[in-house]
Length: 92
Image (cartoon, rainbow, N blue to C red; front, side, top):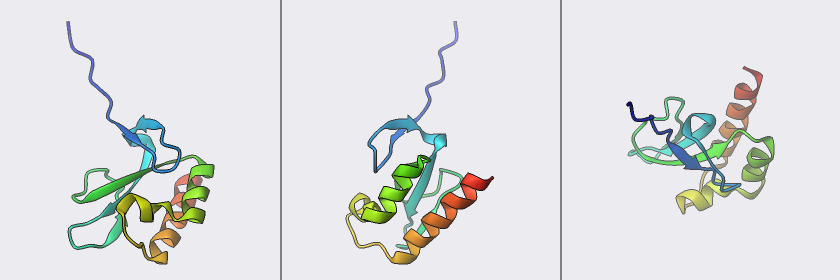
């Protein structure tokens, strides 16, 4: 009898729901201190996850919740890139 493969679960920084990792957007602070979106979900660095729910994305942008996840002030460009990334993902 084969053991069922476990699905990695991660928590959305906004709604706090546990969701399969592949369904989330991952924001990473790389070792060089730059913030970027990790499409592979495997990049090195500290990561924060955000679900695909439009309400979560909107709330994250409005309340700047990535600041809380990384415990630091995040540049506005990161939030602009998040908004753009979400629009691209939604349209594809």
